[in-house]
Image 1 (cartoon, rainbow, N blue to C red):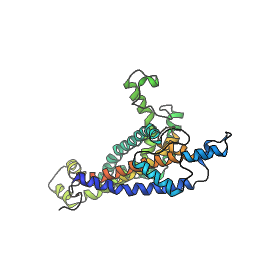
Image 2: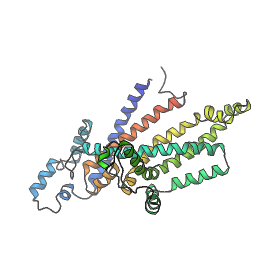
Image 3: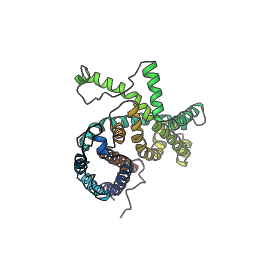
Image 4: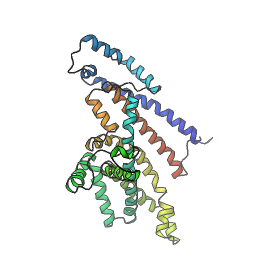
Amino acid sequence: MTLLRYTAWRLAQAVPVLIGILFITFLLVNAVPGDPVRLMVEGQEVDQATIDMLEARYGLDKPFHERFANYVLGVMQGDLGHSFHRGMPVTELIMIRAPPTLMLVLSAFVFALATSIPLGVIAAKRRNEPADHVSRLLAIFGVSTPSFWIGIMLIIVFAVWLGLLPSGRLVYPWRDPGFYGLNNRLELWYHSIRHLILPMIALGTLQMATLMRIERSSMVETLQKDYVRLARAYGVPERTILRKHAFRSAQLPVITIVGLNLSTALGGAVLIETVFEINGMGRLIVQAIAQHDYQVVLGVTVVLAFIFLIGVIITDISYAYVDPRVSYGDED
């Protein structure tokens, strides 16, 4: 099976998964008490005829199965509906809110990979030594501590007490520098990085701790393989063994966890965006749930599920690059 056929096959498998996620979300948001139309006109003197008209406009007067079928057909055509409270297409709303979330999640993964892999390799190389014990404590702290608590503590220490870093919001590097009163792109990037550091660390700590534990365990197991012992017997330097013989073989479990941790990062972004006042998709879905804005909740859920499934597919494809023994299916 070629790479293209395998990718198409995995994408086809993702379709029923997306429909299942959409059905469960659709069922749950419709089971929540409260009428979105009455919430939308709350505080206004509106008669029943107007309420009936609004319900008909948004299709809320139809039975559940008909509304779900119409919504699925709309999603297949790229239409995620209209927001009840914002009066704009959900697709356009997500396009505005998606870049901050993606920037936050990607930066958190960069931070996690850049710290966990070296620490995991060092811990495996110096097994049962002080460096290994420190890495274990760091991993336990990262796995057991909620990301929002880490974010709050980072704000208190680095923003309130020390005044070194900003405590909230983001400076977007794709905007014009004049929007923030800056002179050039260099200043814009500098302020963007400063605003991103605290939420990036808060969101990436759990990913870093998980990846570091897997990296250490995988490296320890690989360093005990027969071919590694043979290389040592031939006098191959330890640095060469780590870099050429052990490191690449040990990355397959790490790649698996990276793909699966994408869902954790997307879920954690909801809390981190709330703590740091970032106007991304996570904060958007929290606001939409509070307002009973069903269309926005469904739209954001579909997009986040799609991003996660794409991440899993990329992870599967990466296996063959890391380990040549992995193929894309049965050979003819």
